[in-house]
Amino acid sequence: MKNFKNKIHNDNDDKKFVPRERQPKGLHVLVRDGDVMKAFRKLKKKVKNAGIMEDLKDKQYYRKPSEIKREKRKKAKRLQRKLQAQADDNRLMGRKNRR
Image (cartoon, rainbow, N blue to C red; front, top):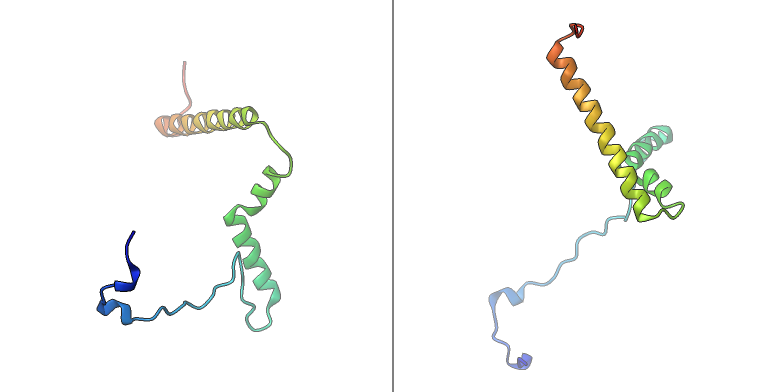
């Protein structure tokens, strides 16, 4: 165990800790010029981009881990089919597929 009473003095010890200005936690929006509707639209956009509503909907009811994994696999398959369809469209460049 170190002996803290006999601490070696450094030049850095003279600097005092200056706390930062406290930022409000969570999402916040400033209302400028009394335009509450504009601030409300900005808040809605921030909530949507942060994914708060989707998270609340997911946590509203308990879902089994196997159910979550199943939905992830279904979503991945859907995305893969969509990307493949786009690649096929790009390859044909608007021409109809003749067989």
